[in-house]
Image: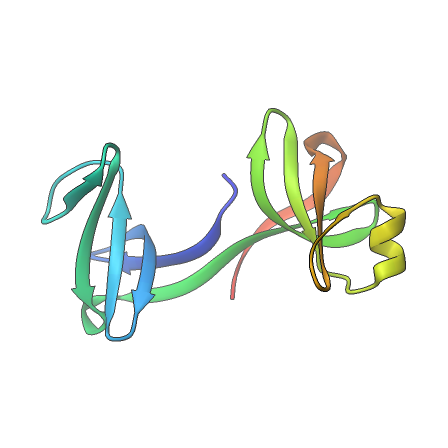
Length: 121
């Protein structure tokens, strides 16, 4: 599983999360335990930040062609990656797209990616 976003632990279980000041929105695919449907397959519960056991930002990182990347998505054997090395000549040599000023992204064959790991930041 590729994750890039906030997660929160509440009552011993981890959820996708969205912090907003003194509250945190928890998300899960099914109804229950005070979660309300916001669309099919997506339910939310809003809690005071003080009730959350842990809140962290999780991202998946890897290396591709010897360079550092963040993994943003996965599709059909390919990974959407964002270069974190900060060097334009390297990004250009890798054939990455300029997504924004100083941000370079592309699709990498999953079989060519190494050191795939999840980090809490």
